[in-house]
Image (cartoon, rainbow, N blue to C red):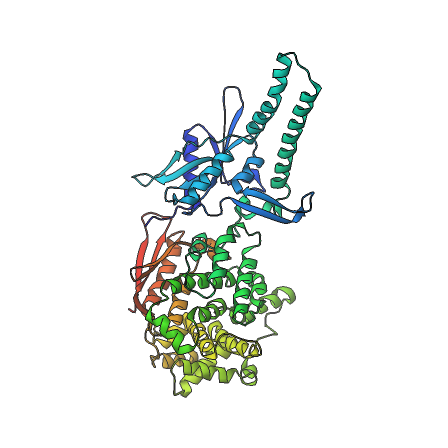
Length: 591
């Protein structure tokens, strides 16, 4: 299995290759803003005429959607039709942005050389875009191969067209013929070429979708947080009830102009509506407030990532007995319940952090040392039937007899600690009750299973259910309560065969770190490197930037693998920087 090269690796190797050819290079230089140019190279010949090269980069294994038709609905042509750019691409844009430069695509050696590649190659020839193949040599060093498809600057192509149009004039003059009709035809040809060139230039530099300079594949903007590897995997999904919508995301994500938050919200709302439920949008709008805390990291896009990762795994295991048994036992397809659990599991994280950020607000605005607006849930817990919802949760956990210790534990976690998993579980049950007037396609049994998974997914909860209370060293009354509850060993290990939904939520939630906005993400730079299901094994490979981030994630995975019990599930973690390689592989073996 070939590791995917990072954009940073590829641009570094390309830069070194071009330097060896006598060029000076810039990698993602601010000199060319608003465009973000992966690699720009320049050198002068003896006549002091500079030679320029611009290289755009593909690091996926597919050329899917590298070229596409771009519809610009906000601008109409003279005949009233929607303007479009045929065979649009970021490399095509760079031809107009740098008309005197040779423009290249650089692709990795693991790119699939299929029919899609053949079409891609033909389009590169058509538009005079060269090709570089990037690879690792036997020593693991980067290497670049010129694929001998000539790259020609746009300005040179235009001169060639003008010369072809003028050639008949020279022939006519040489022959002593100065026919007015032939000169008029030549003039029309020249005007046509100029009009075409100006029109194409305008389409790329003026009409490119709004705001023009923020087009994601041109700017290389950091806001692109949804993993392309995972997006491409969605195209393989065969069994899920909403596979059509996932295929659409896979096909169109690269060309969408909306930001990732809008893309995520649109998909989640659409899928909930398919099941007869309305998704509450509040969390997405509240994220910017929570991000004011420098230690906070995104939880909205995170839910989408968890959902998509789980969709891929569920689809590949769709015919397995635990999946089939889930449908029969809960009168619902597992992917429908997974939709609820994954896209809602952190919905109430804002409540868990409410007191902290509201205290900061009052301190910074009114200089108050005490929080005058502490959130109290005890009255609502009784008035809004949350107490009865808690009983439904306990039944789902198989807790037939609820003693005083268990009641106090739930009360502490819900009312005082405002645990987002517990609150999310209860609020989903409440939300479902509010949606009963609609023609919901999901049964209450399934919603209870989603709520159970949400309640259990947070380590603060599952560690207590599994009897792992060694980390509670304080002698406080609260700690004694947690110790007493932990001693019950209600769920020592969680097996996929017994509860595939809760198992997958904890597994995917543990893995998902890539693309999370916030300082924590900037520090770790987590990345999804690979995911697959074959020969009875489910593996996910992730990497982080350095040893500090590696150690933190390793400790978390080591704790989770003691709780989850199914050694078919494997996590591979590695770091990309530092002396020596930090790599571990952990199977979910329950110890």
